Length: 220
Length: 220
Image (cartoon, rainbow over all chains, first blue to last red; front, top):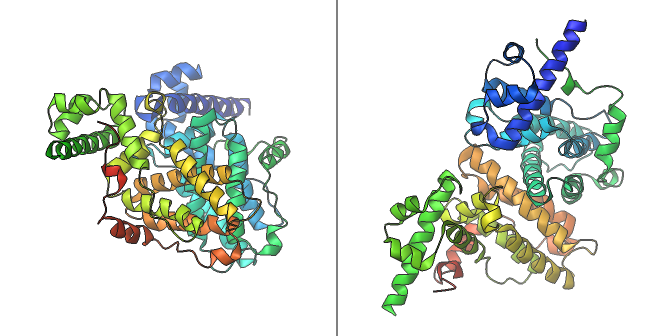
């Protein structure tokens, strides 16, 4: 049990170090030696969890997608919550920040993929359920809207990153939903949604008593 | 006169070569020698128009912003047209494509700036005029919506670039406006707007008889 807990901590330390190195230098320029040094673990410990730089990048991307938010009465609210929570975590969690950098790296993503397909899948599924429940308008195509929100989200967070180091990313993502929600939801649902910039922070505070799945390794 | 025409052509050839090199290698890795070779002009001719790599990057960014579309009855339509035209030009014009790459380069933009402020300014001005005419809803803040559309546009075009080399960028940008327009325009205007994916191509075809200002140098 103590051994398993140590393994979880080591894996997380390695992932956070990898994330910090990837976010600062980009995938191509990052080296496993840099990551080893930042993590402060032995080479054996690192390779026990991740056998290559590619595996480290994949680990960072998987950890980013793992936590989307608690169930809500409205499926559209869950859809918005996934984005507002991600916006809250971006400036605070190096793993989430590195996920955004890695996903948009044209050279790197040929090797390790991107977090976007998983986000699009999650987003499209939630919208499809919202549509079945009559929360969104009949002309909405869940996958189309999901691809739009994931790509727009990326542009908005990049803008915030370049302008002010993500200091206003929660406000900007809230503005994104303010602009998109009226085009997709039925009026009765529209009035009941919480799109406030601080919603991500509130959801996160609720979640900290139970560690989100992102902190728990799925293997080894 | 003939000399001036030659200068215009040389300047454009240099800008297009610079754009191609920046788009392929990024700003940091690009060299003036690469650009000289791609342009097929003399060193003297290049330095007559642009005295450094930074000046070349600024030239590319300025040329991208210069052409926004012809006047329309509705200001909101002009606002949409700027984006649909840009989407049409992205896969076809290396200068426009390089503008997107340069604007989002975290290291490079410290040296030469970004096209985003000029696009945001143009977008906010057009929205402010649309608001004065009663075309958009009273709660809309032009600058906020302008920053949202420019940053979302960037994310959508990057997604299209990475997924399929910009083959579907016009459709995706049309989808972006489909999702944003209902949140900002009054219902009577909404029904009269053309947000179709091929609108950019139609506007561009109308414009080719008169060369857009982007093809004319503003200095020397």
